[in-house]
Length: 169
Image (cartoon, rainbow, N blue to C red; front, top):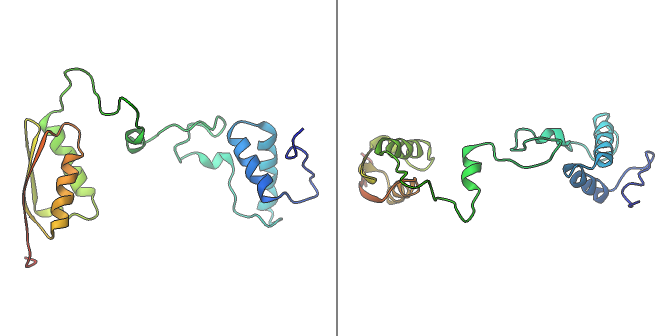
């Protein structure tokens, strides 16, 4: 029997005991889950010094497939893209993204990028080659727009013809 399974309901558990049980609960230890729920019950009544902790059920919405299994599964496209391995970026044989799809993704990235004012940028794609035309407010925006295009799948080359509007017009 480990030191953490000898839990006395009359005493407050230490931070280390609580942290160890939290990890054990994530790994599926039913007794640790029971102790964590008891901690939550105590905290909800305002007892003890640890208030505002969370239970495994709170892990829903943070990319966890199941609070019971504790297995982390990516839920968003961004999380799937961040899963890197030896075959990341290698698609099926003969697969080629259409120019329209590439342009749509670049436009979406430019639109949602917080440091780029894309209102004066035009994007053209032909055979995987991207051409940016228009004006931006700074050299940094120019470089960021180019980087956004280069990061898209299917882009072979980026021709950055953006001009920096130095007088703010």
